[in-house]
Image (cartoon, rainbow, N blue to C red; front, side, top):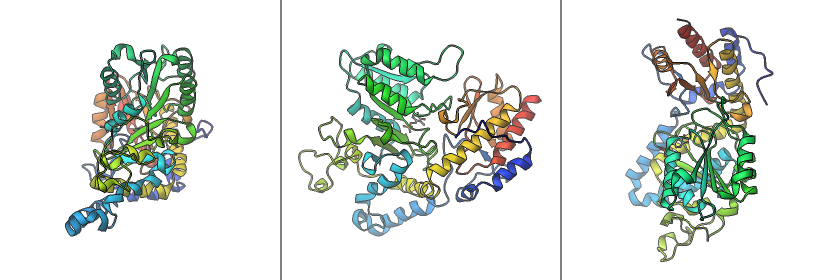
Length: 425
Ligand SMILES: *Cc1c(COP(=O)(O)O)cnc(C)c1O
């Protein structure tokens, strides 16, 4: 479904009409929308950095604090949601976010930590095959992580880490160029590890095709879905992706520093011999408290857990996930394509804004990255003064993420209106 065939109108009345017809409009009321100086709701377009707080989060976290007061150590079994098996509650709803089976997903740790744990199992370089492929301009933590893994195994990152670049004069990578690279050089590549959606350009990579191209040459293929989870319709199992990791504080609205999710395809998840770093919580729960001398990994992605569950941040994640289950990722994505398509339309009606993000809606999530020019930074400051929260990236880009869960068509209209007024003046 692409929005390019839809004809929109530039008026505010039309935006309000779209909001009246939006079946998901009521979900905005489930979130706290921060207020500006004038007491009105901010137009919040940075849900790609930190999602808004669901109104239900407080009660869910409070429940755990109360159960800790009431039960102390007995809470592991007597709490409303017993802590011993707390992580197990997440398998079903989390699997619906990424399109895996419940046994293929686990919620644990934080994102960069999980990326490293996955690379312990899935970056197994040999002297003939040691390269890691990543997109140019990947999120810094991911670049540091892959470079440090290469170095840890004794390779020079300058040689081992390959950054795929867009063609001269283009802003985003072509899938055919990624496929062509893997076809040509894939035999040297141990691991392809890209952002499912690049945080800077907003490009969503065609994960199924990349996984197929990598596998054809014997590479392992994993994705960092920090900007994909809760944003794209994902189908990691069917796409045959080997592993994936994501955070829950961006589109998944689970609070600053929140827990991370991890996907291990069942081809690997049921293999107890796969090398991994082990901890007691990844041990078979039948014997976990018998403290066996030898580690016996639990079946599935849960066998990569190290420590007992982080109940407080996981409670916040639980509250947030309920809303995703109520809406359904399919409905959310359908609204998202409309909302971002409408933003694109309004920007294209005006002069002076170059959109870096692909125009093809299958190759982007909700975010558009807009090249504004030298005054992008001061523009973001001025937008803030007018109650619009967007995000500046060096040298001349602003990123805006209309989040379908809580942003409106009116939000989008007002943003483009202010941007137009500012750049004219
Ligand atoms: C947000 C983000 C991170 C942040 O990592 P943390 O470990 O959660 O601090 C890492 N990688 C990508 C691609 C991101 O978008």
